[in-house]
Length: 135
Image (cartoon, rainbow, N blue to C red; front, side, top):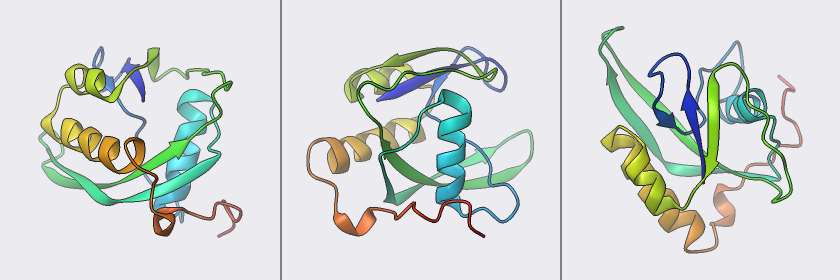
């Protein structure tokens, strides 16, 4: 599990990769783009999950619903952070739960651990990324 230390919004906090959909992107295309932008990594496999993280944004006074994706990368891949993050760590799921600030993040991590780490992910959640960027 890769955790990033934020430099801007929620500065100093650890988080998973995240971002907003741009233009006509599909949510999974956003996940691939954000993975590349924030870490320099490319997904070998990308999965949808059957969960969304839901939280209230106090500053914007909106309820955010964010689909959750899981990317598998090569073990030899090197992380290159962008300006949004100052550090990264590969950690066990159990450790990640203690490092993120929000209950919603911890719930997402627990479910991902159960569905993608402790068992083989369902083939029905794998996303064919061969047409990424073709809108």
